[in-house]
Image 1 (cartoon, helix red, strand yellow):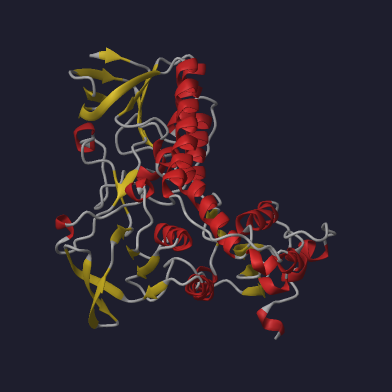
Image 2 (cartoon, rainbow, N blue to C red):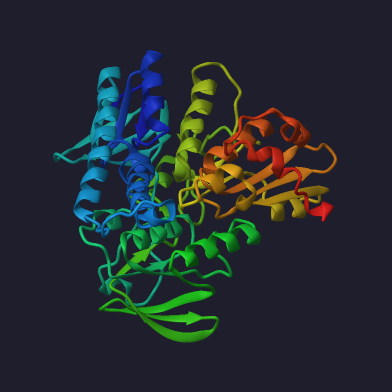
Length: 458
């Protein structure tokens, strides 16, 4: 049994900086990684997908050239080049991360870790053999993978997930997508722009189930304008070779044939091989690690970081988990996850930036609220660049006049949302933004006019 001060299982966006901080604090630290360094974000999440989204947007703008008085030649898509560009950027990010770990003198152990007892691990090495490790601090950062829905026949066909779809070297003729969440929407629009016929099948009544209906209706409108077929209340019953789906749509059966199938029906935690119960670590019914608001598991000295504990699965949340652990374990702090703001952006085009409460959540909370809503056609900058699809929306506490929720579906929606998030963090009243002198013509300037459009003024 080898002794360390700290062991991190998984090289994700929280575990990597935590490893560096632990070594800097004089802790003998090991990191166990069964796959590629960098976790989901670098290898199969943010970095590769947003790289490919950028390629798809170039194709979209090239086809729209005539709208701006620019006439381009016939547009063709070289998927091998798109993939090559994606791979190069991922490889660069991964190498940078590995170099930082090496420079910091984190011991990187390649293999699969599993608990054998309280704060004790066995690692089945990729090179063969095994190592037995123990430490007073163990951090679980093993992330998630694409969930596999219980659909008859799925195991008989070569289906795609969010990882394998980015390795295609040809544009699919007809891409069927199971799931109308963030992954399904991003890839659906991306491959439509690459030239695929795309059908999205969503089991619920609207896309992006957690968002307000007015926002999701606008998202659906944009995707349909782009030529994407959207089937709501659609339940896949069976899939047959040749990518033939038997689907119940609005309780009526129909058959849909495609060339490729992307399964984007959620995420499942990477905890099965970890054997957490052997270490006294409890999981929920789906296998996610249970933690309190200090990221402590049910086993003393064992913590969980990032997606593996469930909740908001975003890179910036994983990074904030690292900051909480560093503050509490190394800096004498008392940070928790309570009441932390969770911003996020969906990188469809135009982007959807979101932070705070939705209108639905605010109304259910019993607060007295006001809702400001404005179409992007009212934004001068959006008109000038001919990118007017979408809307801006802010939910305001009627008593304090503070902004409690924001949705910006529009060009650079994530950036504009962040402007409003800063106001929320500073507890500014909506009138401060309404009266602010902001540079013209910028997208951020739209927050002046947004607060002229409260629903109760109609």
